[in-house]
Amino acid sequence: MIRTLLILSIIALAACTTLNQDKNSLEQFPAEAQWIGDAAEQAPTDSLMYLDDPSPLFRKDFKTEAKVNSAKLYISAAGYYRATINGNRIGDQLLDPAWTNYSKRIYFSEYDITSDITDGENCLGVTLGNGFYNPLPMKMWGGRNIREELPTGRPIFIAALVLEYDNGESEMIVSDNSWSYEYGPMLRNSVYLGEVYDADREIDGWNLPGYQDSNWEKALVKKSPGGKLQKLFFPPIQLTEKISPIEIYEQEEGLYIVDMGVNFTGSYKIKLKGNKGDTISFRFGERIYDDGAINPMTTVCGQIKRAGVGGSGAPAIAWQIDKYIFGEDGEAYYSPEFTFHTYRYMEISGLDEKPQTSDITGHFLHTNVPKNVR
Image (tube, rainbow, N blue to C red; front, side, top):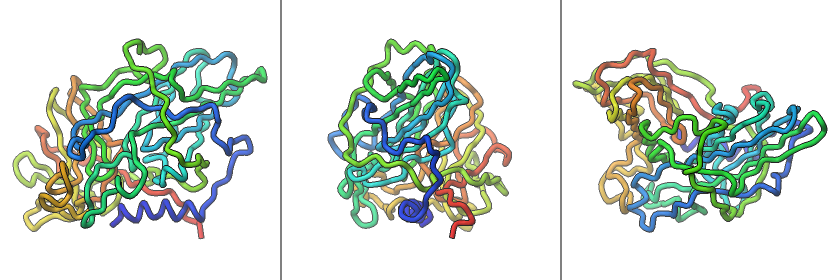
């Protein structure tokens, strides 16, 4: 499957591909930084792991003391992360860091965010996703459970922002228990089963400087997963191509099928309209049936296609499904963050009217290997 090839490409590139490094880059992660996470405990039984488990949002305000000449962020996670500075996404890497055995090696990334730092007040924000560090306990391909094969745990992250001032002084903002956290709108996220996003739980301005977080919890210092932090030296996963649908048709009343025209691995961005509480559901398939209905069995996770196969709490059929729940805003743009899909066809239910092809863009994601690499 394309999903498997994506993972294999990451592993292969780790062994054979290198990138040019800035001479001022740090090759070793700053020792002052600590692994941090939330206070939630792992569900005690497999079945409970399929319930809502909102992703935590972490924030850290800081103030620059002079004009900044250089600002570099070093960051990694056990799981996935999305980082922001003053509300703006940092970098264009997705599903980062690359999947590894977290007890042996964990790759960290470096971002130059000098131009994003403002004089005075600033804010770093981090959202955590489960990734392959906190996978669901599904018994795939005849009984293989990732949680029994590799080290797993609750998502955590580690970060260090190194500031160099024009007066010759420097400062380091690191992950520790001075960060604050709260739970956000992402109710569930699984690399295999998809994402559930409740816009009514969005927290406006949470990753902007000056946000009042006095009612947020303090981050907890966590034990390291054990792996050596190693600087990323191969191409990351990125959005390399945007794909426009070639057709959208109503397969039955209120059920729309989007034909992207090509089978690919990745995600999408869609413009949605609805009322508070409306739930829009998305299913994915590589093929359709003769009557035009989507064939979601072509993208079932781990060949879990009937009840009792996937283990306690697992869905009878492990379809790839995303859900978006409307908040107060009647119009929104949605793009999943911590999952990916293999598909040509997307089935959408819950809309009051047929979407336009201009409302949807497919996102082709893969390890961004330069085309001239031999």
